[in-house]
Image (cartoon, rainbow, N blue to C red; front, top):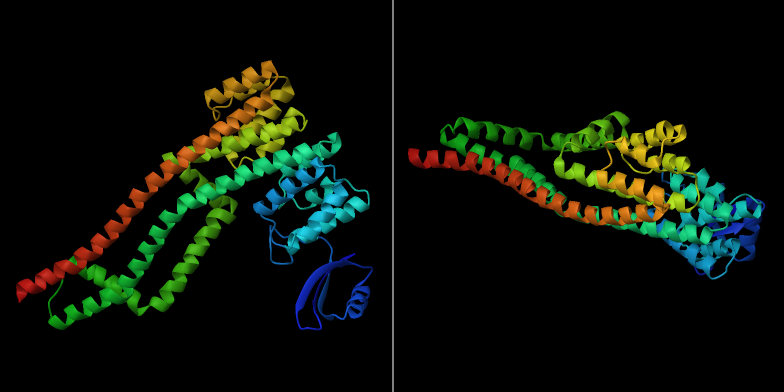
Length: 403
């Protein structure tokens, strides 16, 4: 068994590590022989992953997967056997959750189990595409090529995520700043102005009275309102992104926003082309490749289209090109290229070209999205500030007139 231990050395320094032993007693005996004072010893029975979280409170993220695949591709290319490559990775990785996973991979290899089975066990971390590519590569003896392709596709996915995150940073900062300004003005500034007018016995305009009333209410109940607002935001986020019903509502809504819907379609098509190409290159049958790709595209509409192409088209003897032609989701250029490449026998190359094309189109869509969001948010902030300014200036002008 594999154990994860935490201990204190004679100089007082804390050490952590992994060791193979028959029982925790053997681990404690070994620690005593090394002059270590044990703090904790835990048997590693796998990652025990729930979702993406492990017993270590960490997760295997896309950067870890990029490093794993790139490193394994390199090690296999220079002639290192798989078992030795895993051994080297275990010694190189400091991240406990990755190290625990690799130890389990090594143990399964030692027991004669197929390499892909450990990845299959953790489908919440490793996608069906990832697992099927490794399985196909292991069967055909082309793991080096599979790991190289996986590394490239994961790098592209990582770059895409980073681009989207970077593009959204400025709009999110604007939104947060607007929220903070509104709360500060409503909770602290408006109540003081409202009280000042109350002392003058001058009735502000109706609109100003409404704004002052809201400000007084927020100021008097700020300790109740803030937690409620945070809870409401978290609840809305959970409903929209963690529940099927909420996610369907959110997806339906954003697909009606022109700029966002175009971006989402291009992302889905890029994933389709890249994934489908990788699976076909690995030697998987076309129907199995389509079924696996359907789970990876991140679009329910495209997923349904791919499943229909596989089950109602190709399995019933319809050509790939004709099956794609029946689905309105795909642009004509994609359908025509797939139909031509099917006849020419180089579909994988055409799909890779499509993937590169949509990658560049995604960059353009992200720039368009930022150009769309910035003026909308600035207009919103200007509207809020304008409403507050008018509600304050109007009664001040009235007060000056009275005096």
